Amino acid sequence: MTSVAEQRAAVTAAAAADPARHPRPSRPPLEGIRIADFCWMGVGAVATRLLADFGAEVIRIEDRNRLDMPRRLPIYKGGNARTYGEEDADPDPNKGGLFNNYNRNKLGITINMRDKRGRELCERLIRTSSVVTENFAPGVMERWGLTYDAVKELVPNVIMARMSGFGHSGPHAEFKSFGPVVQAVSGLSYISGLPGQEPSGWGMSYMDNMAAYYNAAALLMAIYHRNNTGEGTEIDVSAIEAGINLVGPVLLDVSVNGRKTRDRAYPTGNRLEFQEAAPHGVFPTRGDDRWIAISVFNQNEWQGLVAEMGSPAWAFEPRFATQADRYANQDALEEALAAFTRTRERYDLMHRLQARGVAASVVQNAEDLNEHDPQTAERGLFFEMDHPVIGPARFEGTPIRFSRLEQENWRSAPLLGEDNRYVTREILGLSEEQYETYAAEGVI
Picture 1 (cartoon, rainbow, N blue to C red):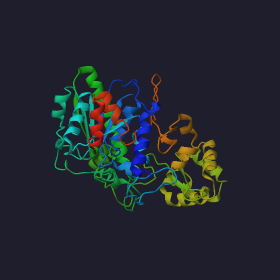
Picture 2: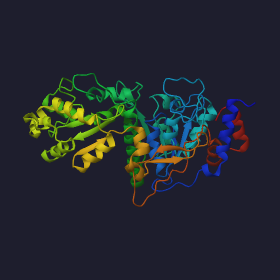
Picture 3: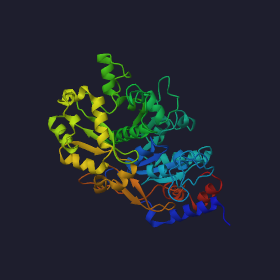
């Protein structure tokens, strides 16, 4: 009987031998860009995924002894699925749903950076690349001797993107961070939620993904600059500062008007201050935890909503006569409207209100987006891809369409070490004997 490790190694070997998963020529617009990618978690991996989607050859560098957290975390597909909070001492690193979602179209190798031969391999890989990316806590790349100045000696016009929570300078530069920390420190969490209540936060890792898009944009600008000038760039992205960018209007309100960002009237929750829309919020519908968003901006829309409600007597009370009246009496208005919406099926009500010219939309969950939303289905945002371990599965795609470029999802995320042979033999020039030795001695 083979061990679990042997079974996993056999699956990886079979995947590496599958012609359909072999590396192929890169594609426009990032054709010819090879990235030595040290990124992990989400904030770096999502950034390089965007570049991989559009033709960059991203070679992801991992450590077998310190697995990327998304390889270990739920969400899992299939009979052995588990959820957050259910510990697994030895999770299959190839089943992690987050990892597989973050790393499509990339190659993957494992290198032991604690071994001198591993660091040498890494430097050889950087020499063949033109971009280096990382999002470790500050100090990790320095311990490996891979500072920007050192990397420039390997590739004079290299682009090196460093992505961290607080940036690489300042009194907090050494602090570690994750999405929820970034959201809190940047001020985003403080302005979330309903007035008079504690902040609700922005979900688990909103800023991991948002900062990733800043990282990707910075990389593209640096590539554009190098194409025009031949010059390389060091990029230092602070996720905290990316978060502060999203607080801009609130910062302006505080600095210009001296407004408090938390009291009994602020944040406004689902209500809109400018213009005075009322009703403007989310309301319960039939079913468990089902909601609909409704916004009324003028008298015509109000009349459409009243007609759909069957013209109840309360809607004709003087306190709801004008838009200003309704805005001044939102508590009573929302209570009465919720009593109506609670009896209706959400999608049916959305369509009926839209037909009457009222802005309305179902509050959709993940299942709705993936399986029921006709717009995302038409755009093909979610697509199915085969994976050597979990089989066919649906993944989130890129929301970007170009008239003259085609985004291709040519391979699911790499299994752990799947491309070790290809990268070390075909790109770095190791002999078969060296490859076997390095594999046997844990260098790769």
